[in-house]
Image (cartoon, rainbow, N blue to C red; front, top):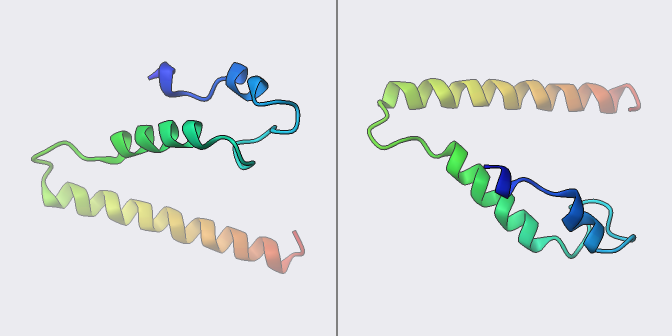
Length: 78
């Protein structure tokens, strides 16, 4: 999987003004990252529904925790 990881050399070749993947010009890197994420998140065929539900519930818990943390940060002025 190392071939899909963002490399410092590709970031350097984009020029000094492009320092993060959020700036324009990183579409190919985003496409690689998104494909890697899809592959990692796609369950194997035949995965029992119970396992999928358990995984979905865990992700929902994480999302709720993250939203709560962000909202607390906004309230405290962060």
